[in-house]
Image: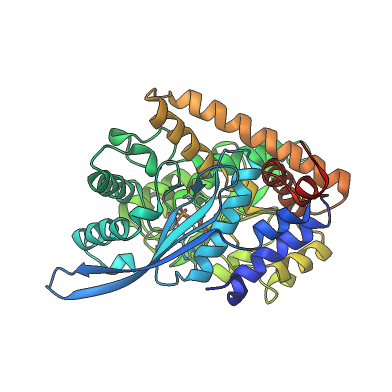
Length: 433
Ligand code: NAD
């Protein structure tokens, strides 16, 4: 598929075009970043438990690897398409550069409803995916990780399958693995914790007083539940949370730790509406996901899927600040409306970069064979998130641009340096050794 075919991708690359106005880079950089480096589409045959053979479409896109091996998660969802995977790979390129990780951007996915599969079918599908893409990935080529509806156990199967194919233990081909087979402590909470560090770094600059700061979180999964709980523990008033089934709202604040426990026990937010400690602890209303997005809160944290805030609902957003924990939850059309309304959006490529940052730490630990303590992971994660948040905020203030444009410009400068280091038109035409 060409880059021009997908709506999501054309929306994603619109951000690149905007950022380009604020950087001074050789044309070669733009030319390099216009196209994905490599794309792979595969058909994965899976023998189902009832004996039937089913074929699932799978994808892997390596968008750019000028700064290092491609890095990016694998998504299992019925809505997965080439367009989506390519957009996610594009975002990963900028995210890794924004955080100064020695990686390029990649992404993968399978069009499947994982909830409809048995565990053994899921294992066969995951191993089948690795069989199909094994020649396309590798610890120094393209490294997998978890994304929506994939988890450490699936990463463990993938690492094992790749190791079987290569006839050697290859821990570094996958991050987000279980600890027992080379995972890093702190990877499971890294995305939410990274987002929390971004908010904490912005607290003095935005004059946020946690006790008076209300927060709504859409998506109560790996990323959303962790940032909600850390904010709750830090004294912020988390007034609304939701999952794919719906949401709950309490103006006086929710007890996130007990909601997490309930959700883990029941696997659905719906089940905490009127059961167990949450209901007995605090009065609350049930709300839809659409209602959650337009609540009158200080911080809105979309942490579910892309395209949640669009031109259709952007005018109704009442939050002052949006922190994008999900990838691509705000469309570029919505960005323009929000900017006019004075809503500041902190972009995905910064806010949710804690996940890939600790994935990087995991890859480093796999290569060195020396494993870090949780305190060390948290210390290094905080340092990276705070440093890059402050730099990006400074660029936004200095250049008077949105935080998103500042983050892209910051990443572009780093990618630009790498492209330039390999020679540009100017070098080839005007210089002699
Ligand atoms: P997850 O599968 O653990 O959680 C997703 C959550 O969103 C679930 O609670 C699900 O019920 C909910 N959800 C799904 N559809 C919804 C809808 N229409 N409305 C409201 N809620 C809905 O996934 P995750 O790992 O937490 O990822 C969430 C987002 O964060 C994705 O955009 C992902 O790309 C991004 N992200 C995740 C990581 C990571 O390390 N987990 C890293 C970077 C970015």
